[in-house]
Amino acid sequence: MSSLPVIALESVSKRYGSRTVIHDLSFTVEKGEIVGFLGPNGAGKTTTMRMIAGFTTATSGRVTVAGYDMATQNAEAARQIGYLPERPPLYDTLDVSAYLRFVAKVKRVPPSAISAELDRVTAACGLAGVFRREIYKLSKGYRQRVGLAQALLGTPEVLLLDEPTIGLDPAQIQETRDVIRAIGEAHAVLFSTHILSEVTLICRRVAIISHGRLLAIDSPTGLQRAVEQTNRVTLQVIAPAQALREELLSVAGVRAVEIDAVPGERRMLSVDCQVDEREGVEAAIARAVANRWELRRLERQQPTLENIFLRYVSAAPAGSTAA
Amino acid sequence: MSGTLAVYQKEIATYFRSPIAYFVIAVFMMGTGYFFTYNIFLTGDATMGETLRNMGVLLLLVIPVVSMRLFSAEDSTGTMELLLTLPLTPWQVVLGKYLGAVTILLLMTAATLIDLVPLYLFGNPETTTILSGYIGFVLLGMACLAVGQFFSALTQNQIVAALITVPVLLGFWFIGHLQSFQTSYALRGLLGYLSFSLHFGAFIQGLLRTEAVTFYLAVSAIALTLNASYLQWRR
Image (cartoon, rainbow over all chains, first blue to last red; front, side, top):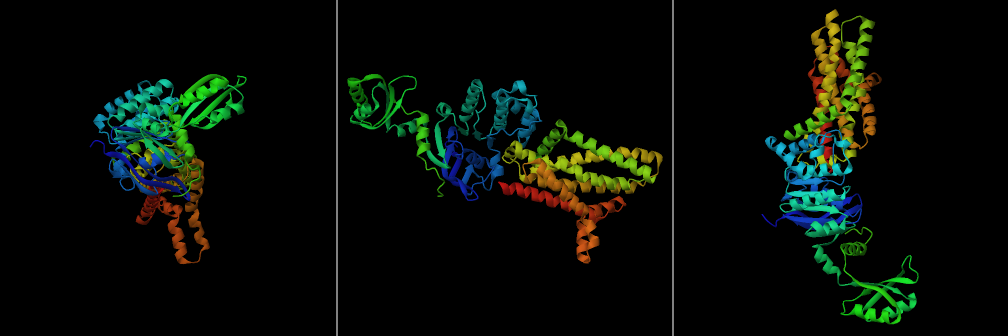
């Protein structure tokens, strides 16, 4: 059973009328794997989640979950899916226990096991204190957690979480991540987020999507390595801008230079150099600058996930050029 | 079946944890009480005939209040996403909701039975006629609910759902009146057959006709089928 793709998308596209929102998307999520789904707003994350959850169907291509084709066998697949949509789907007038009981029944949790199952998810999501409270009285954080608890009911094989930590306070975010990590050990988890650090913390792999296209899918370190080929050196110098630019561009290995004033510091410049991988570029820059002006700081920038993400996303074509 | 039952129980819980059920039942009782008193003192006859006819019209206005939220509210609060991704078929969702609404209809109907107490105390009404009238009333209500529920699925906005349902139901109610303007025998027949009020009139007179029973059940079945197909299609 292990390492079989539990979620598989095979060149999936989704069109609404003439507008294509997902282009030829393919990726898999395996059992015991947590995959982070990254993308700017409107990239198609929610649409992709909805197709996997069976709320909408793909226009072309195939989505399979736990071996079931979502186009034809979504009723069977639904039992294997726990889904937390972007907006927690809650019935405001019900209390938490009645709501969770409803979902448990629909998910065919045996009647004798329902109470134990409710206890389990209530504990996992820290809902014991509000178990009997009507949902409309709950804060945003609690609503989010009720939504998560609902997704966990019936221990589904696949967990789809659309921005699960949005609206939570730092302590709750921590708890939610722990819950996701624990589930990820035995299940397949796909969760979308725009908190990049979250991805490095809990995901084995990251999928970056923009304008409905998959730009990259790899481990966070793998992505880092791919971007590292172009390195950056930043420095702060007190120097005349034009002369500094000429000096820096004359150093072997420096490809491009960007100079900005440092706000609040007179005559201080902040410089961003694109350099190639040559050994000792930093040293050469340091020598060239320190000889003539006052060098305050020099630093080699490791690409952060932010950089990686921005690089991929800004490199993607803007218009939806239909495939 | 268990899915339908779970949806049904959820619906009932929603009705009684919000003011909708209480409000609808109370308003309907008040309306019916008014018509009953009015008709009894006006005619002096110990019958429910005229009152049931008035209840039918009142029903056309009350049903949209019950039906408008059935799917529109699910759509606007985002719970539709839950219902359609849980292991439920569209039919289970449609039936569970419909049976919940029918339960409210039955409670509404049962509440009006209080009017029968003075009728039987001070008069000698025909039990079979009253019974057939009530059967017709429930069947009419079921057809109206199914139509209203279908329109509720078409929009996210409850008010829009109600604004479509009311004229459609009134149209079905009054369509029989167009008969007198028609010369074609077939067209007259068709208009009569489609009329909610003509079929209901037969029930009130104590005629329990298969044709009328089938008509209301068919309207319900068609509306519910459209409803389920629409849910399937929108995926």
